[in-house]
Image (tube, rainbow, N blue to C red; front, side, top):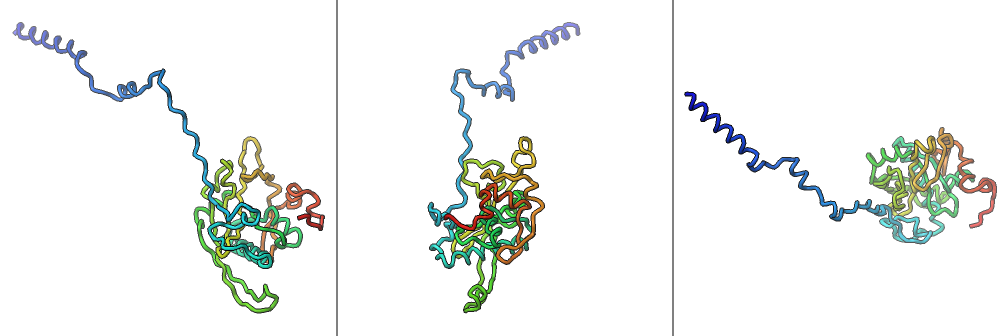
Amino acid sequence: MRLILTFLALLTATTASALPNQPQTPSSTTTTTSSLKDPGEKRDEPKKPAQQKKYFHEAGATMELGHYDARYFRTVVPYAEHRPALRHLVRSWLSTSGELGVETWLAHGTLLGWWWGGRVMPWDYDLDVQMPTATLAYLGRYFNRTLHDYAFDARKEAGGGGGGWVNKTYLLDVNPHATDIDRGNGANVIDARWIDTSNGLYIDITGLAERDPAGAPGIWSCKNSHKYRIAELYPVRRTEFEGVPARVPFAFDKILTDEYGGKSLTNTEWSG
């Protein structure tokens, strides 16, 4: 019996001493070690961010053609018809945004037109409105690429002449980059557009947000670096523009003089 136990002990010791020399099963540690690059090997350069592609495209590069959406442009709207077309464009936007319950206000040259009589300026090519970027995100989520009908009585436009009720269709198109904080490569500074599908005329819709809360708290701006203090925007003022309810920023006079100079509110001559 003692001889058998001695033999088994010798056999176990021999087996145990042989285990380190056996091939090991690969493990995650082994795999990680084998994937390390040689210090002298050339490392891959970090990839540069892809350049943004322009979302909105205009009919041409001239001042005139640059104010038509390429998808719906057919021919230049004659001068006599241009102002009425812009009038219906802004009326339809203000009416539709009111129905949707979204907050928007007049901006830039459109705001200046409101100051000088509550109408579109005779020489304006397009129209501008602003809204909080959060509101833009809401429109993009629930109403992007939606078509909206707007009807008006053409007899009133013609001073009681011929015509009748006319229905026009407008597209609300929100840029996929509308809620981006920075301007990127500048190709998508226009956040959204309200587009007349019969001719391509549009309203530029720009989102404002606090883009640098740490460095410039309380300052709202767009991707084109127009900056406003919150107290200059709110509370917005209720008014009318082209005969329909509208809103303008609280400190509209300061905003206009900052952008166009003090004479813009008093000078009755236009230099072209």
